[in-house]
Image 1 (cartoon, each protein chain N blue to C red):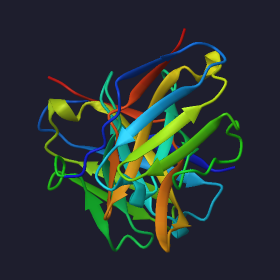
Image 2 (image 1 turned 180 degrees about the horizontal axis):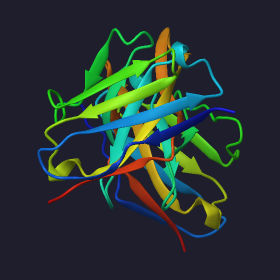
Image 3 (image 1 turned 180 degrees about the vertical axis):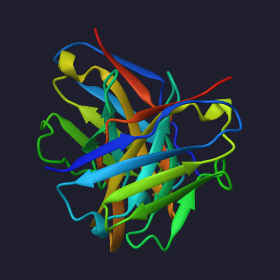
Length: 106
Length: 125
């Protein structure tokens, strides 16, 4: 079955850049998405189609993907960005989520 | 405003059954694939099932296939998850989510653009 691997945690200082990677076989061909989830809340879509940002999502969130790795980048990280982040991709008609990365803003 | 509201969660004994519902509003429900996604306490997201717009195609993750069934009622703008033979490992918050699609590299690509607030299912004796 298809798998997506993320680092368990990423730490970043306020105002700095956080990069979260997601690895999977030929992931770049699958145009992955990214979701942010804060404690006690439902996931929120922050990047879709690999690089697109939904309306209402701050410009500091960006996505890139190539080959077998996708990256979510948070530029100028703010305290409010502290959350769990999940990548997601479709494999045929099934949906696969990454293992999740906790971003801590120190 | 797009809204998805789940209901039907609760405490159930191992081997029991439960039916979750998800009421959609603020969009043309019959035009979208829909998903169920779950999250065990303190763990990550796991896709459970999805269903085509007309209900004619459904897909389930291996761990629930044969026990859970996704369905929908487009007249009532509702999505369902019938859960039978429940196990302790099915304990989770269950979310319904709308599937939207875009056009990527010459083919369609899909994403979950709206999520409900979730409903907690606890399987325990």
